[in-house]
Image (cartoon, rainbow, N blue to C red):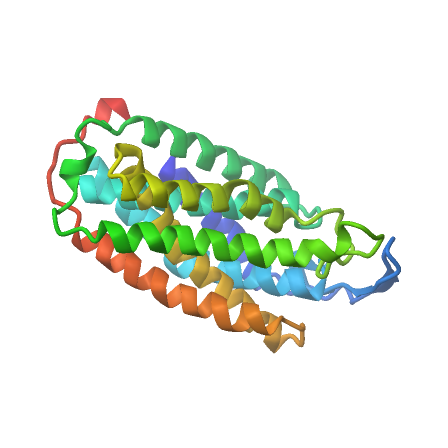
Length: 286
């Protein structure tokens, strides 16, 4: 299933990056009275300039980082590497998040059914792999030197930051009819909904459970560490590409996301260094 995800996402990413047919940008007024300009080029021609820029950046990170990481971790997991299994779990979390956003946010295009297949494959692969772990022995897979306090506080902090960032964006629209910033011609704030509904609770819960040294805390930390590394790298690329395309991006996002990206890279390295190299996977359970 992981190799199928890698194959399909490779196709989807290449089409996203290299489809260049010029349909022509359009200007029209949204239901909130906002004038929106569509991208007008390639597979994302119906999307806004902002979302198309994010899609292209996401496709690039998926192509050069996520797909190779998925293939490599899948192969070594099959060979019995426990360390690779943790990496694979977090990588599947990245693919699940990415293609869920493509299904529910991007304007409809001919790749829609592939987005759905990728979302479904990622979800069930993630669930099956999660179920393969033995929680009773999972702590033994980590070095006693694992900086539990640092990792726990980091996850709680990044969860709280994302929550405050998005709630601050939503707050002005709760008691009036104004459109949230960035809604454009879309129906709702999909990314903010996914982050507030899934990413924030998982990050905070993972941090708390890890601080208490609960087995599920170690498992969820692997998801946050790997997904955080790949996803924040993609977000940083999205911000850069938006700015290149003349999209206005808030100063908070421009400064804080790259900063958290650096932390995420460090956390990813620390996480890998503190995983043992035991080969004790029951492949029949995956």
